[in-house]
Amino acid sequence: EAARVHGAGVVRRLIDDAPWGEDADYRLFYNVNFPPVTADEVKGVKATAQGWRRDAFFSTEATNSPAGRRFLWVKGGPQHTPTAPGTDAAANLDGYISVTPLRADLTAHETLDVLKERLE
Image 1 (tube, rainbow, N blue to C red):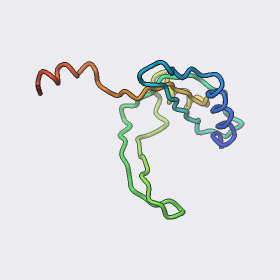
Image 2 (cartoon, rainbow, N blue to C red; image 1 turned 120 degrees about the vertical axis):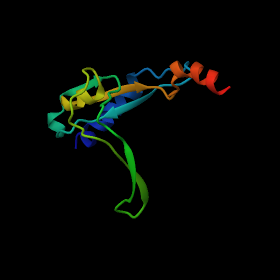
Image 3 (cartoon, one colour; image 1 turned 90 degrees about the horizontal axis):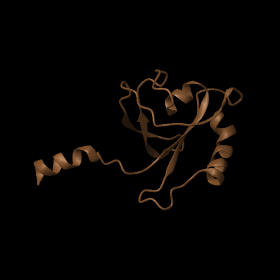
Image 4 (cartoon, helix red, strand yellow; image 1 turned 45 degrees about the horizontal axis):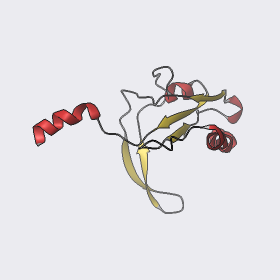
């Protein structure tokens, strides 16, 4: 319900007001998460860092949609475990919509030189 009621407005604000990093090698994209509350209980929108939980072990499960299409359902750990302040997960647990700016480069740069030494 929170996403249905507030989603279009949040996306419109991102389109109109958010920086997009057009001049960067990896352009920005935004991850928007909605809190597990009713639309009336949403407290607002917060810009957040990406959160992480030690006990969240993600996996996928192949399943069928009600329309009969195959898709992968992403499964994770407990979603109500507290996490670091200022993160998307903390904002969601607090009743806020979280917006996290992200980039697609997932390279572990701190490991790259060691890996080159061992493999090349």
